[in-house]
Image 1 (cartoon, helix red, strand yellow):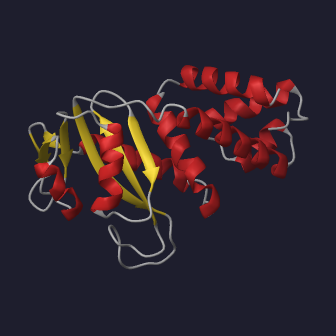
Image 2 (image 1 turned 60 degrees about the horizontal axis):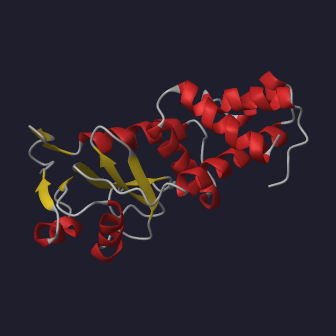
Length: 218
């Protein structure tokens, strides 16, 4: 990336607004920069975060892991959830008491989900899912598999996927404020949500993003 022509002071203020979840349009007014400039700067921050999170992809989860998939975007009303047309499917894994990992996928077939699970989850770990048919193969896999039937209940003692569903809710709440995200940039936004979840303290987010920007943008 080329270094930004913005002053360091304005960059720091934009970073603070980015971490606060301010939209680029609002930040441009508060920092007194052009709206296009603020939008481009926020895009570059998301690119830095994407590369930062990409560098952690080799981390393997163990212990108790929740898996689930969700759908984002799309203007078509009517059918919702799995198979919703014009929506972007995202697969997620969450280590209880730890981090989340999300990945954009083309479909939710067994052949798509199992390689991701095997890449990210240590054998003999406990994997929790719902009753979606693509998770049937986990019953005869190298993992201990428990599943919750959401038509009957959402939790049965430790058997639930409330953690990953909480992440989906947080991510959708954060992304809703942008009033639509270009599909070509969605991978940046969903990884931003992963970054925020995995670094819940504002001070930590500021520290990481400042250090990333200092190397590439200042």
